[in-house]
Length: 342
Figure 1 (cartoon, rainbow, N blue to C red):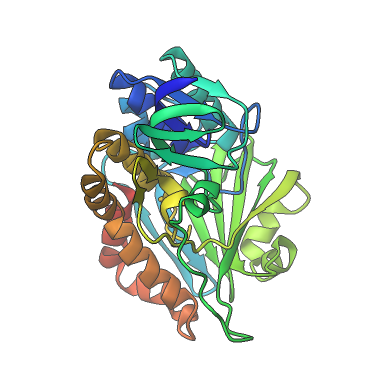
Figure 2 (cartoon, rainbow, N blue to C red; figure 1 turned 180 degrees about the vertical axis):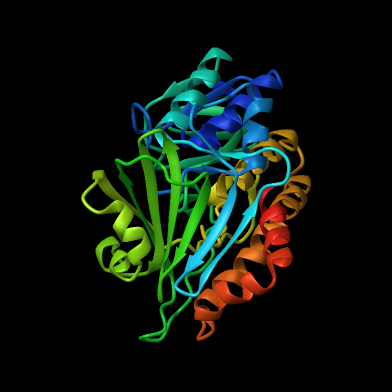
């Protein structure tokens, strides 16, 4: 099979890349080993900027309006409501189905296979039996393509007891949402993100060090635990370590897109907005690797700087002061939220 663009990974970012390529008149094949809707551990909150990009692709998944962000701890809480359009809480499977349907309607072809080899040739690339002029690697945190084409950054050596890598868990709870805000509950060691995703369902995503679990974290968050007692539904899903690095984002006709290109942390909740922006940039710069590198840096700058700073603070002895400081400076808190949301 020959095509213009081979997209490896049929998650939301991969499907967004496929849609963008089809809208530009390119033939597209998506390689994804899993059939059906792809679920994963994530916060399921779409920032206003992510929702705006989806609408530009005529994708409008059902969900719950998100009016803003609330940071909460025993010291109190600070809220910021988005200026302008709202975000949306959307089940990951609902989002995936909407993107998959749109990509198929536009003529993108999906094949169910695994990529275990990538051959770069003068005229393009071959993977999973597909020859293509360009390959967009959208295969997630632990990208196989990133490793196969030599873009994996060397692992950092960590002395015993100094591993500060963070992991994620997510579970749904069958209860009516009690707020139109994404609540971020700060425990002594982890953060619990509460996102309304349906009229009778909320998702709780937990971010913290290795070994963090929902039960022990909820025990330190009585306000949240009281609302969720006895109503879990579905399995708990995990992901991590969240921090991933790449040496660069291009190798010949290959482009790393989304989490495959590098990831800081889910703390600020804008992963999909950044991934969608990268997908659009990758398709726009298929014939110019340097232009994609520049576009990648521009699309991720705020996320990398602000999220890295917050993660460093959250992992320091000053962690407990984060919410009180935000309460004393609501204007600054709101400015950071707005910068990341758009």
